[in-house]
Length: 193
Image (cartoon, rainbow, N blue to C red; front, side, top):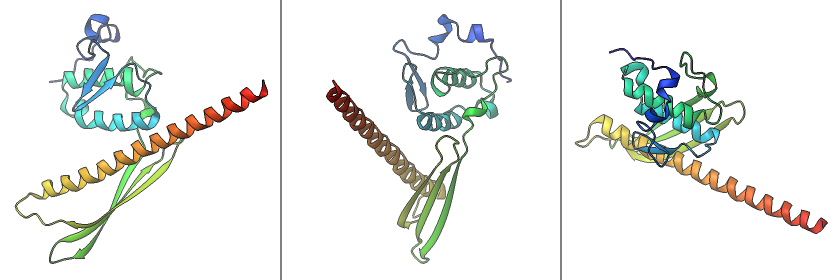
């Protein structure tokens, strides 16, 4: 069934908002919950964008609810504070992420299906380009009663967990750095008085 592209005034009318935004200001997408009051960094918005693509694939499934929830995510989370263009509901060029993943698998022991996987995440964001490398050593890639998809998912979840840990550590380091710099500037300014 084709999506009904609800007009902006109707979709974002106060009485309709409670369909997708909880009374305490949260929108849920898959297993994740996001606050409409929080200002997300570009890096956080990139990750949220990927979550939306995974859990709200409205372009391929043509499900009305998924489309509407995506519009709310773009309005209040991903493109916040600047809104995305409403009239034709296009996905903004600003948020189409230039993120690529590469994987290089090395066979260490063929008989036991022991492998090593090196992954690289490349972000070509103009304002903040980055490259992240991660290696999983001595992985048992034999199925042993599991499907290939289950083995793959276990590896992918390990890599994704390492990426999220990296993001959390980087954010904590940056926050501490900003805090120290601010404290030093405040102390120096106080000495001027």
